[in-house]
Length: 94
Image (cartoon, rainbow, N blue to C red):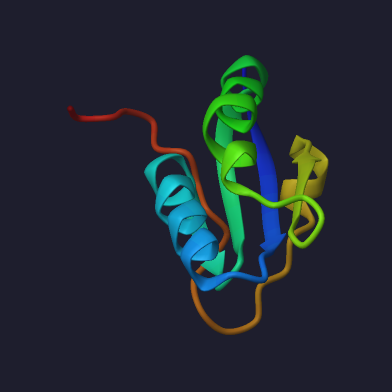
């Protein structure tokens, strides 16, 4: 079941930061410079964390946080300026 996740990071090194941002952009919607909304199945999120995202980080210097957003939290989101909260499309054209 797809769930909405808020992923944010603080990465010291420019190269690692850019690599992670590019990977996140493949599955997530950037909502701020280091904040992404990710509509992903829990198993897919876990797989991406273990195989793609965390291996890029130097955990002694970097910080990656993943917060689950349930339907109630999403309904309570308030955005001032910029784009509206990410909506998962009803269909995907490949």
